[in-house]
Length: 71
Image (tube, rainbow, N blue to C red; front, side):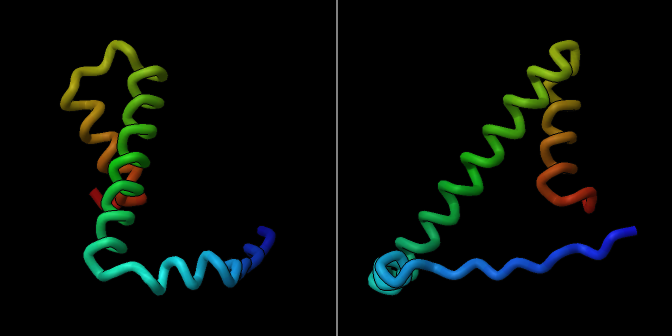
């Protein structure tokens, strides 16, 4: 098995300054919006892949994928 390559993301100086200028509440709101968007995208993909699944099955699969299998 091939070892995983590690990648370090480096923020552009302007982006780093923008993030530093945000309040804690603003940063939390950004994270919350990103989490909700990711959840919506995963849910849409699952519904597309499994149109016969119930809402409960879709909800459980979304949770499983977002928790990397922990749920």
